[in-house]
Length: 272
Image 1: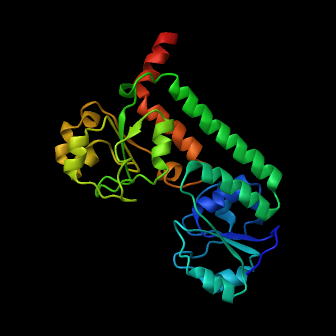
Image 2: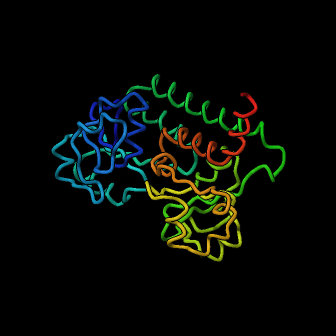
């Protein structure tokens, strides 16, 4: 199906696409969001429709000019159904941090808000570069980069393989990800691997659970890890680092604070 921008009625099928639409200046054109969408606050007042699986009947009733989807979340086979319904759909893919910024620019083109989208994407890219440069000032050798383990939760050890942009976030924040060379896109780690790798810092979407106690409840052998012994186990909102959208910059800034918390403390002491 062909599509001629700009659109007046957008329907994003993933939370990161909703955030990108607002960042691109097209928030007022979003007619509905999925059940997991929680940012920006304006989405609370919008209709919520099922996206996994897609509630096509509700989608038709909303009369969108364009549906936004992502290959990381949405089934590509749904494109055939959208085509049969005469509803244009645009699939994004976000393998890198840069692709997120470019996606905002593309969304601006689709929505007719290119100027706002370009300014937003450029500002985010600049802020991300600032974080990387600021961290680089304190890094002289590889030993200055703590070994970081990023987990999706505290029970099953789900992590991220070499094709994930998560390693770019860790690198920009001044760390080195211990799973950056793994071939699997979403590896499930063994306790033996983690114990052998000896991460200096563990970061995960652990919610409000107390750390490292909750991690040790599931993996008691981890009490021997440097990260646990030194109190370097942290919880971070998964929306900030696992959702490829404009808040990746905020997530990277938080990672930098976590990974180099000892240096931040020393810096504050030196200025007092």
